[in-house]
Amino acid sequence: MSTAPSRVYAARLVGLPIFDPQGDQVGKVRDLVVAVRSESSQPRVLGMVAEVFGRRRIFVPMTRVTNIDAGQVYTTGLLNMRRFEQRSTETLVVGQLFDKAVTITATGVTGTVYDVAIEQARNRDWVVSRIAVQEPSKGLRRRGQTHVVEWGEATGLTRREPAQGATRLLHAINELRPADAATVIHDLPVERRAAVVAALSDERLADILEELPEDEQVEILNLLEGERAADVLEEMDPDDAADLIRELPPETAASLLALMEPDDAEDVKRLMSYVENTAGAMMTSEPVILGPDATIADALAHVRNPDLTPAIAALVYVCRPPLETPTGRFLGVSHIQRLLREPPSTLVAGALDESLEHLRPEATLDEVAAHLAAYNLVAAPVVDEDGRLLGAVSVDDLLDHMLPDNWRDRALSRNVKSGVTDG
Image 1: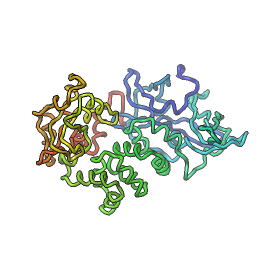
Image 2: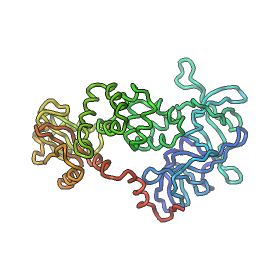
Image 3: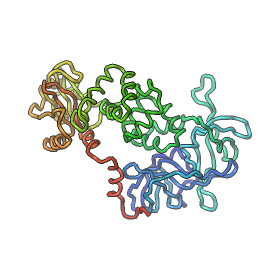
Image 4: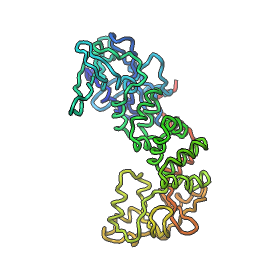
């Protein structure tokens, strides 16, 4: 590793791509695994936790790392694809050292760890050489003073704390996409997971929950008090909230629905009333809906919303008032390609695809799949017998319900590249 930098900070490593010798990306760095023996002896870096295909986390020994360069990590290309399982003698740098309360021995200053530096020792092993500590904020200061000290110059690093903070870990999680943040939270020790979940905003936690399997959603929801759980459910897409509430015991589900805002609860109850694995059960009740007097400019402004998935933003649904589902009479859809070709001042009602067939809420998974395939669609309207728009089914909704529970692991086994081993 002669070209590697002499010192690397963990916070900068997290999220970096990992490449094989051919230059193909095989994963991303998610954490560092170290062996903490004492407060005086520099911990040896055992390896990296890497996220590979299908969001699986594996262990990459430092002996397999050939280079840590600016913005990337290189390996020998020969990796063990077994899922990473932390041993009792191992410590996760981001998951367990960040936010740990410590005292700098020479000065008596107390603070929390916000970063850790690693470097190669003379024997070529990677070790934790320094820690970055931040004091609590004082007075009008937004941030407390920071200090970088040698590993042996602080105490508290080996102490087990039942209520370790989550400030730095929270910052790292908020920088990730929801799917990546969900993986990080899943792999945290129980007490750290609880601290992070408690500190996340309702909206951010809702985004992350939507990316987790339902059993893990239930596990995290059980960490929350009733009012907080109801607030998080309100921030979730109604179809995802309905799927989650279906997994709860009936008395718990009823209690949470009672705590939710009436309008939000009504949307969820309506989705739960449909037979599972039908268009009604899997649809989102909040597509982009506009009245016939809206302009093309209005429509484009709505589909620019970064919170919309590409599939939902691909179609605008035009209806008579009321414009909340179930709407007034459904008039038709306008495709985003058509919107981009029309003058901005044109009424959206003049750019409708009125020939497109709609789905009924009782349509089965196979019927929905056939409909999307037949019309080359990424989303389709769901309309009741009275001609009212109930919602829209997108291709990602369909895949979520059609793929088996272990589809990520199956995808991994199909995509494992030569040079990557299970042994």
